[in-house]
Image (tube, rainbow, N blue to C red; front, side, top):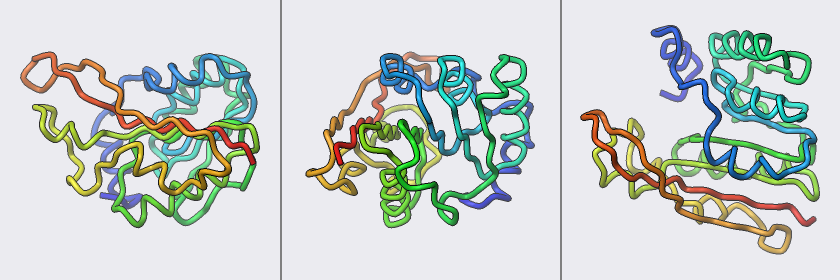
Length: 204
């Protein structure tokens, strides 16, 4: 489920996989930030990257799926921001981003086995420039108690505190939260889920 082939199959199986809307925690955290250089990791069909580009960010968007990147590039073209987004086909587990290269690093719902996840998050933290922001959002383990069907195995869920464990407290200002939001489950019922949200500003 973590291979390029698996993601290509998933994206190829339907015309679109995601809603086309930016992730709500990105909107909540980035709306007030001055635009600069952003790295969108696991960019999928491009909703977050396009949202950032529309607000003046210069975005590097990385995904493991060529199909997703083709859709994302078309989305950016339709939105008139193609010149503000660079689309990169890569697996960041094998091709780490440039260190200290970005004012915002955005990683939404990247669920991997624990050791792999820690290595990835440490690399993403290293990509944040001094004064920049690291935003990591995941499905909180509390969601396993709800009627929402999570594809991920329980050990791949994480808290914001888990994500923050890769950061040196001396170099970061950290907020780690479980944020509730309302969604509709497969039976059509409204339920409350929680996002694990790590927002960290790099001091040094």
